Image 1 (tube, helix red, strand yellow):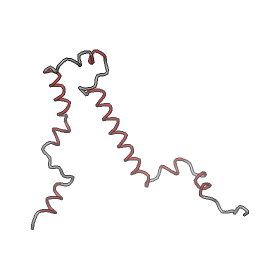
Image 2 (cartoon, rainbow, N blue to C red):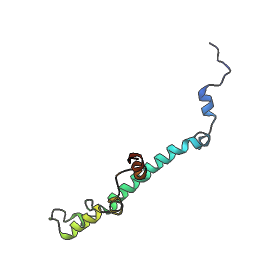
Image 3 (cartoon, rainbow, N blue to C red):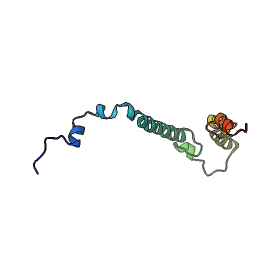
Image 4 (cartoon, one colour):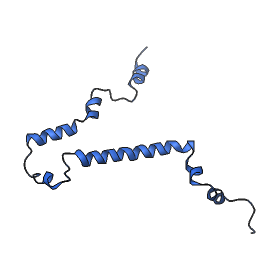
Length: 108
């Protein structure tokens, strides 16, 4: 069949720039979600590498790994486990909206 004069879908996409395709309000949520995931992953990896007591980058830190735990190593592990977020969240109820949950479940 002879080609038609109607533009195809690909022709419409090819004529748009990257900015016209991706910088739109309906794309913002996915950009925020992916950006947040990348940020959290980067934070977790940096925290593990920089301050985890079970991970040693330099050789002098690894030289005495076979020796039984000393008080200093136990204290270091406890400080690692009991970080700021854990101690802050420890007393909270495990609910996303505790006020709303209480209001919806309390008898009237």
